[in-house]
Each structure stands twice: as structure tokens, then as C-alpha cells.
Length: 305
Ligand code: PRP
Ligand code: ZN
Image 1 (cartoon, rainbow, N blue to C red):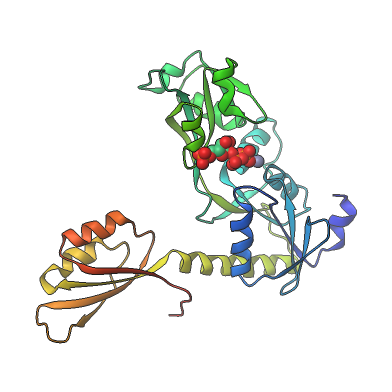
Image 2 (tube, rainbow, N blue to C red; image 1 turned 90 degrees about the vertical axis):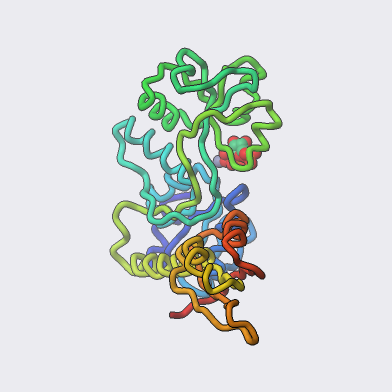
């Protein structure tokens, strides 16, 4: 990207998102839910915003903090793991931090973890002393090892970290774990978490003072609205009146429940509540044990209080 291209569209906001990978579809889906529509260019790298003066740049996720630092993009959707790694690396080189986390987006959840071969014993971090740990996240791993006061050697790789123990080039790895399938396939076992990660909206330390600052604010408000609705669920159930207190206690953030009588029953009532946060099978099973029946969890599409 030449500086000329970056400077040309000062009155349009530019967001960097991952071109292909774990976060790419979900990131574009989030922007679509925020009402942004794009026309994709033929090279499929630049998408012109048709509904608002907000354009998209499709790039490698590792390039996103740097693009924000250079002012090529104003915002980016990137994993916290990538942002933190590059931030720590910049601090270590006495450079300014490339970008900051503006808001966590609640998708792309994963963790950066230490994993060992299945047959290696592990009870505490001290047992990593003297080991060679392969990673693509040397700054985060180095930081964690210092915090744990463990002296291990960090083997920096550019990919395929999970096969390093089998190749004999490392004794352990430090890599992203999401479903855990990669670890299982490589006969590795997760033993410690370095950081919890998810997709975040990143931006420059100082928001642009021109019209892009207002656009960024507008987008941030829409993202917050979309995230809130996505995490909201309508819970409906039947329960004996006597069990209501116990059941509403089990609802995540569901204090303002509506209680309705059920025709032909003195004792049973129907409960409806909008809950914020995940409702798991465990929640439902706990409520059932507390006396709830006919439990239903429905997604909320739009909300206006
Ligand atoms: C990560 C990581 C593992 C895999 C773990 O790579 O390096 O290979 O995902 O996921 P799992 O636990 O669901 O098997 P990713 O595809 O995110 O690519 P990148 O880190 O190279 O950008
Ligand atoms: Zn990557």
C-alpha cells in the first residue's frame, strides 16, 4: 500500500479485516449487521462502502496493527493475541505501541496455551524450566515465562508449531487453542494458559480529529448495539410459583422477568425474561432441577427499550 493511497481518502474511514481465516467471515458479518454494505473490487482486497463512507481493506491478520500504526487504516478487527504480541514486541524495541483495543467483540474466542506431549508429566510451570518451547508468539510467551520465573528457551517459528515436538526441534509448544482438535491430532496436551483471546476492534491511540472520528464513534455505537442483541436471549418457561425465586436466581442477568398466570392453574405460572450473556445447557438443567418445565430459549433480533 503506497502512502498516496492512504492519504487520498481522508474523509472516508478505513477498516482492516482478515482476508481469509478464522475471523474473516464473522468480521464481515458483524459489519453487515451494523448496516454497512460494500462493493468488492476485482482484486478483492479493497471494498468500497456504499451505505456509509467506510471502506474495507482485506489483509493478513498479522498486518492489521501495523496498518493502523501507519495510518493506512483507522480501525481493524483482529485477535487480541496478535494485537498484544505486536504491542509487547514494540515496547521491547522501545517503539510506540501500534494500536489499542477499543472493544472486545465476543467472537473468535481462543487461548494462547502451553502444550506438552501426552507422555510428559506436568503439575506446575516450574517444570518447564530448561525446555525448548516453540511458538509464533515469542513476546507473549517470553512475558509469561518471566512472570512465572521460569527459564526456558523460546524457539521462534513462523507456523506449523504443533509438529515441532515430533520433529525434535522443541519439547513443548505455545500456540492458539480453540476447539483443541489440533492438539489432539498432534498428541499434545494443554497444560497452562498464557492469555485468553477473542476478536477485538483495534484503533489508533488518538482517534482522527476529522470526520473519520465521528464515523468511528457511530460505528462503535452500532457494534455495541449488535453485540448486545447477539448476547441477548428470550427465555420462556413454566414453573410452580414457589420455585420462581430460585429459578430467577439461576437466570444470567434475568432479574426483570415477566410472570404471567396460566389459564386453569393456580399454582403454575409462565415466566419470560430477556437475559444478557450465554445460556448454556447447564443453566437449563439447573433451572429444570429447580422446578422449571417447558424451557425455551429464543434469539432476540432487535431491541428498543
Ligand atoms: C491456530 C493455531 C492452531 C489452530 C488451533 O491457527 O495455530 O493451528 O488454530 O485451533 P483448534 O484448537 O481449533 O484446532 P489459525 O488457524 O488461527 O491460524 P494463524 O494463527 O496461523 O493465523
Ligand atoms: Zn495469522
